[in-house]
Amino acid sequence: MKYLPILVALFSSLCTSFAGDNPRNSFTPVQNALFRSNELQTDVYIAGSAGTVSGVTTTGVGGGLGINYFATKYLGFGVDNALEGLNGDGKTYDSLKGSVIVRLPIEKWHLAPYAMIGGGACWASGTSVGCGTVGPGIECRINRNVGLFLDSRYMFGNRPLNETQTRAGIRLVF
Image (cartoon, rainbow, N blue to C red; front, top):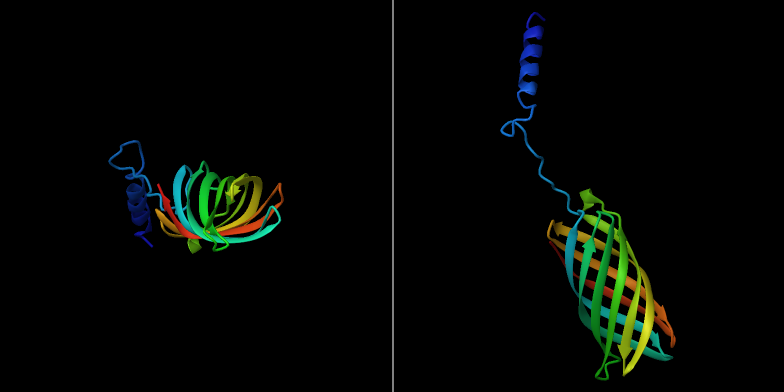
């Protein structure tokens, strides 16, 4: 017990030796967050669609590219374009969409479920169709710069459009 005041004084002097404005004695913690504000992302994916466009039943498989920007950890904006073969008959289906993305990162599991809402246009067989989109998705971050994602959107619009597009791919984060 007689050494307790000495230990308290020693501990206090050690703690205060790291405090202050001297940059040599201060440190900045490393940011280990997987999902961050000001993220710029590039998506490369395969896509599959099924539904009806202008009263014609369609299915398609193809791929696409996208770019997203997350202004905050939870809110982002994205644009993507998918090109798919249509009904296996040599015709193509193209869709360009913009989305507002809301995500809820779960850092300890490396996961971020998200929801998208937006709109754009689809082209098939010389016909263009305006569309609205809404759907869920999930991303798994392998590390701070690479993730895998899976999402599905319901696309609806005029002439009538009633279709689902599902995407799976890799996300590169900058």
